Image 1 (tube, helix red, strand yellow):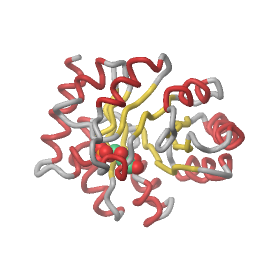
Image 2: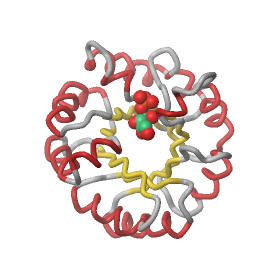
Image 3: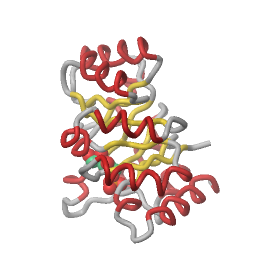
Length: 210
Ligand SMILES: O=C(CO)[C@H](O)[C@H](O)COP(=O)(O)O
């Protein structure tokens, strides 16, 4: 069964907890966005895990160096999954995987900005990561001509465990899961909705219907 991940790209612990309280019944993974962690520090990870011990808490660290050290900080704070950039060296990814093994947790590689996301996804899967995020970041999404179809096509040919992030919403989540993504990541489609709980519920039902 595919998973639904809410990406919380809000800026305070208070706002993040308030959103999570509304949408947690419908999601498997609660992602704390990079700006949120940079703004609030690792305390937001602890607060979220304490509030939702039954959910996977995903710390979107986007680590580019010092993989073992940064991952260790987040796991000690309560994270279940952390991200490392695919553009980082393999040593950084291997370091994060070492920390994950020590804590019984996992690593996700974020391919944002990487020229050949599928090639990198296959390479880093061999390093022991849990899955790879085929990701078009917010800046890429705002570039003229962007279409999530490129990520859907990549998911279909990846052949390794992947998530898809970059404009997932109710109109495309079915295609994302049909393409083979194990996880659909939705940020603005949930936190930007007038009724985030209803938006998360609709996405959950769409994911489960595939
Ligand atoms: O990690 C992120 C940006 O770097 C976002 O959380 C991710 O892109 C999902 O958000 P959205 O659904 O709004 O695109």
